[in-house]
Image 1 (cartoon, rainbow, N blue to C red):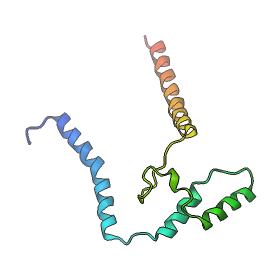
Image 2: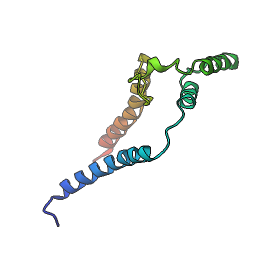
Image 3: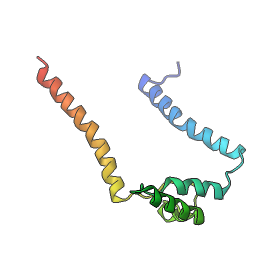
Image 4: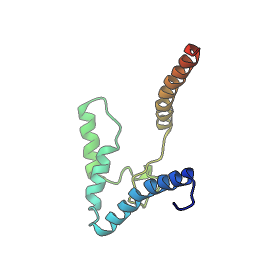
Length: 119
């Protein structure tokens, strides 16, 4: 072989598997035509408003987005970027923590049950 241990080979394989998709995306981006910024802003504007209590309020929010497609740019991490990573607010953080806590609690209870039941 190449003188590397099994752990080193698995680590290198993991790094390769993690990096190749991003490099492929960068390569595809270089050879394809960029999306129309107005179209992308309209799509992103439709995805970002919070859910409303009624269909009329949702239609009003979508109409506002069509008139001002850049109205959610202040939520971006990098404002002048094409990337749509948004800042987290308190409700986002609480939701993420809740989504992690629930399966974590289930796994911990399962482990406790296995330890209790083991001879």
